[in-house]
Image (cartoon, rainbow, N blue to C red; front, side, top):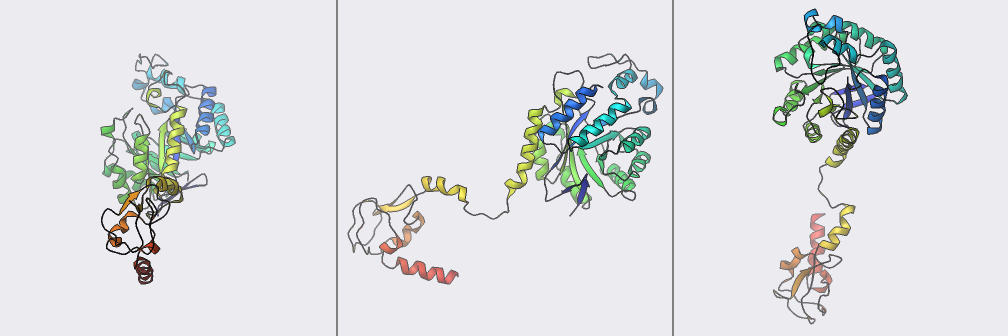
Length: 363
């Protein structure tokens, strides 16, 4: 059975979901907003928070860094300025790492470049996340794998060949890998989710835990993914859909995240053991709704039962169940029955003995 351990939590096919609240840059470069998001995520019951770290000057070409970025979500005149405005400083990162530890939350970071990965390793992050944009970046995958931390690999936009290449690059260096099915559109439309890929990935990598990086605007599809075998779930998280930034509109608010965690935790319990049986919780409703055989009129002792002598009525609080009717017809009553009196096996000639004999044969 595939297994992954993140910060002491054992993740496996027979267990509960591991849920990450993807804060990303929804903190808008503000330490207090970041802490508020982490605190709210903890209250929702998630296992970890996830942020993003970039060294923008090293990551982007000069031309891309200096590209004008004029739109309603921009925090700067150029794309580089926009990204810089969203970054946290070194001391702020240290404070967030301390705060996550205090709340006993996993602290996962998607590093987008080697210097950011170095900084995250220095922070002693719980795990590293690879964004879908790095699925083809084999040198970087290998570099981060050497830190020895658990790794979450998003696969948005990738083919099986691309995923094979990435997995084969990582595993010789680090076996603590989870492959996340992902649709790299924001938000992802339902018709683009292709959740059956989860089954494909489980068959292709039977030694690895499979998960879902979910950009769909809702929680129901994550439950479907669990049923298909996903056990790690990443979901974008915000405190206000109206905040400036492209992620907020499709991110879950605390109420949605709380319901997602609750429902994912319920699934394993709801699946049960597969044995169909009558449960204690069903006794009262089924007594009220169920039926028993009763006399449809006053019947004398010695009367031979014919159709119409007995009928099924609620509640099912005694007597014989209606499926016994055919076995009773043509048999003689051993005692009289009043109108609507329960019929028991001891009331009808030969029934008690037949039930006892059947019990012996079945034993």
